[in-house]
Length: 295
Image (tube, rainbow, N blue to C red; front, top):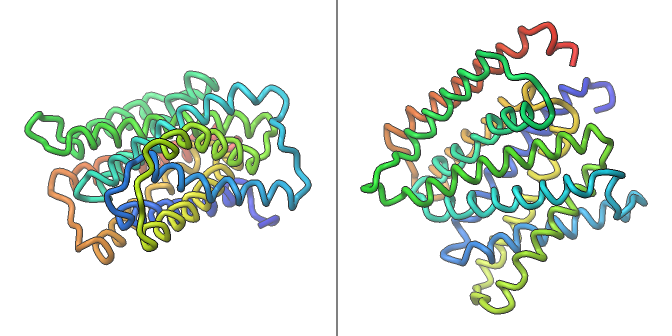
């Protein structure tokens, strides 16, 4: 990949990440009715060992880059909130593609948080795209008290907010020279420390198949996490975030073939179209901006 531009590397990484995260969503469902904290624990357990192994193998430090510790704590706190929201939505919504789409609001929130905290300017048309994506998300959430999936839908939306904030912190630390492998290690260790007490006092017995599925959740999550961390380190969110929407395609295909022929309702499909259209429009607009091409 040395001959590729940073933007191309970012695109490849984000596509691989999307494929891994779609697999993670499928295995979350296949693992059955286990408590969300237990699923989150195993999601990060595998990533913790993989990240530790890679740091040791490459003789890299287990200490944060100078000035990055506060951002690691922010990234881990909001990132864990995002994971809880996404896992709860994925487990309790009838269609995994709905949960995945709500989580894919994260690039829009990354754009918002990057503007607020990293001073990356948001143009008028980008603002319109953010509003359009929000309206599309409402079609997926269907915010009425008669909607039995309202709570998991809101959890999925909050998961997207948390993920967007986390990716902003990842982007900032990447600019400061932080090692992406350490970023994954720190987040995984933080998540294990937070969720371990729940398992100690409220462990839910699992079958061998459930344990296997949760370990596969962890493998996919680790691949997705390394991919997304590398992607946003290589390039700004405004240049590559649109490719993260391939996750919806992967998730919908897996949901149909492996999770009982899941087909989203018409409101959700229209919401998908609106959100994806806003993402594509924003991507095209960004790449027409001369100032952005120099980034």
